[in-house]
Length: 286
Image 1 (cartoon, rainbow, N blue to C red):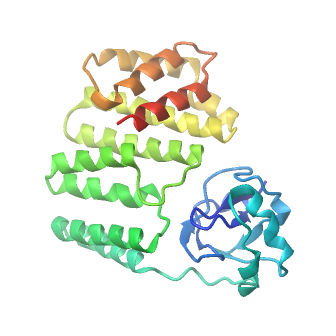
Image 2: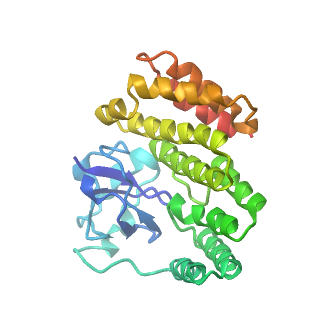
Image 3: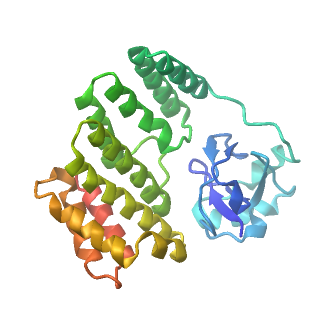
């Protein structure tokens, strides 16, 4: 089944085979850098045959002005007037942006243990991402708290993780499954942070948060078999026990703990839709 998705900037609709998730492309409508989402099925209300196909990391469309008229029904006005400027199949990779270059430079500096230099270059890359309205995965932004922790700036690192969790990052996808996946990754980085600080008790709590967000993403993608495998009765029972073992107050994420305990306690009648909404409300409240 094809992945049918829209550009987060201009809403142009494209499609790709389901095994192409994560490949970096440029939107053929506005040329913004983006990744094909890791999702199966239709993400926008456009028939797959009417979406512009993506090949080898670049996009191509069928000639003709009528093709774009159906795109507006899903996410905004039609863009058919400029479709003719891009045609044919190309295997050339997307052009590297200045932000891409700085992200690589930051990684190189970090490998040399120049954490201060890496942090400065990383921040420069983030400013370029904002300025150019580029689409980058959450992994790019999770690098900053890791670098900060490795440089000994613990408070700054934890603050950055919380900013990503509660405030998001530039051009973060609004699709609920992608948001849940992002939060799963953020919670996992928080778990790793806490484990490195020797806070194994609270790290176990964040481990549960990360796994439940992953489960919500699977639910949103209708990947029910994988969801049942991830969250069996025994696993859900273990997660409730882990959450009970930590009696402390978790501050802003306390409602996330409460929601997970209550909803998992209804196994096998866990309402993942409700759980996802409760977590969304909790993280939007700060």
